[in-house]
Length: 274
Image (cartoon, rainbow, N blue to C red; front, side):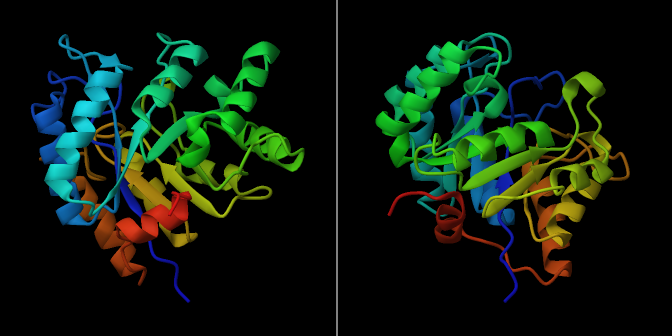
C-alpha cells in the first residue's frame, strides 16, 4: 500500500521578516489566512510561530491561544496544528516547557538539542520528567533533529525507556541557517543510516528545498514546506506565498502516486491522542 504524504506548512518561522517577503504572515490574522490557503493547496498540518509587536519570534502563551482560536475558525479542523518551542537563543528549556504547559496544544515540536541537552544533565532530566508527568504526555510530539547524532541520541533514550510514550515522529532538518540557508538533498541520506521511527518528515532550505523534499517524498517520508525555510522555487523565482510552495510539493507527491494526507491521517502519523 502506498503511504500517504503528509505536507506540513511552516508559514513564517522564527527568522524571516516582512522585509524579506511582503506575504510573510506575522500577525495572527495573517497566519490564519496563510494556513487556510495552504490547506486548500494540499497541506494536512501546520507548524506555526507567533510574533510579538516588533515582529520578532516569541514564546507567548496568550498569542498562541489567540492564534489557535483563529485557526479553528479558519480551517475548521481540516489540518493538525502544531506549535513550536524553538528557542532561537532567547528562551531556556524551562520557558519552553512552561509555554507548552500553558497553551496545551494538540501538537508541538521539540528540538532534541534544546530540550534534551546532553551538555546539561539537570535540564535533560527535567525534560524527561516533564515528558512523563506533564500535560505534554497527551500531545502529538514531533522531535526536531538537526543531525543523525540528534536522532541516534533520541532513539537511544527511547530504547533505555526514558522517553515517556516513545518516539512517534521526527523532523530531519536538511541544511542550517548558519550555513547560508541552503541544504544539500544528499544530506538526507545521513539520516537514513540507522533505525528510524514510524513517522519521518524532512525540511530543506532555500533554493534546494524542492529537491530535498522531493527526495524525502521519494523515500516514503513526509515534507514540511513554507516560508520558514524558503521563499523561492527551485529555479530561484520568488514564491507568491506559502500556498504556492505547498502546491509545488503537493505536485511532487502526486507525481510519485502518493495521496495527500488530511487531518485525520496527520493526527495518526504524529501520534495525536484520540
